[in-house]
Length: 339
Ligand code: TXA
Ligand code: MG
Image 1 (tube, rainbow, N blue to C red):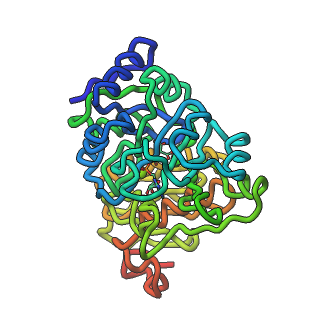
Image 2 (cartoon, rainbow, N blue to C red):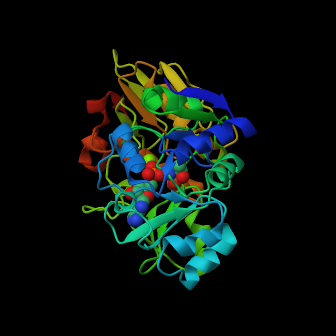
């Protein structure tokens, strides 16, 4: 089992030397925990894919601690990128640009582009600076499963197979970065911690391409970010649970009638979308451990961070529950719920 150490100058030094020597370290960012390796070491990056059981077609984000580094990693930093970096880095925005030769192919899964981000979490920044190399890091979870927002989530999923977990407490933003492809016309590949509206205020309208038959970005797969328990997004708050069905409920705000549910998690006491995003994966982890047959979910308003939350929830609903995207939605009794 990997050692779990609280963040300190000493533990960051230790983590940095593990990274430099080709090992794997889980570390906090402002969005979710990342599983980091030296981005310039293809063997270390290959270990990330093994540990996560991640398909090799899924490219990894390169994390840097200085915006100037981007010039080395990509061929050309276009104007839109410059403006967005100036405005939003460090922070939960990942930019995709044509890659330079210094980035190993395994990092980008053979694509001609590289995804880069400068996190705002002080521990992440100190780790990158101390390691003195860019850090390739996907979220520190098994492929397709819920992302980790605490060191415990990391330990439960992949703790046995990595070298160290830096424990910086619960992450603040709670959903992954927004991925914006700037290699052509600006296209959102994944809504995330930076609201799309904020980006559009700076560079104008962007295309949003989050589900694709032939994904440019595997975050676009129809099913992803998924608990093991089937999950269903409700259309309204009125429902009855059929007898014998152990149902859980993920509620946006506190609810009065708790009786039909075996377990309830509330995203935000005050209906605040930032708080809801920060709690999303923790609440889903808790429900998934609750021995439930199904998790019902109350939708959140699709503005600002609400878009990233609903994106994750729809993908968690995914193909496990084919009713989600078909007329079966109107026949809720099949799934143990009556509208
Ligand atoms: O907030 C985050 O972004 C977290 C923290 C650790 O930084 N990282 C994260 O990484 O969520 P990951 O690997 O779980 O998701 C990265 C997404 C994937 O959907 C991947 O396909 C996409 O970014 N991506 C990476 N490189 C890409 C590229 N060159 N072109 C298109 N999509 C890319
Ligand atoms: Mg991920």
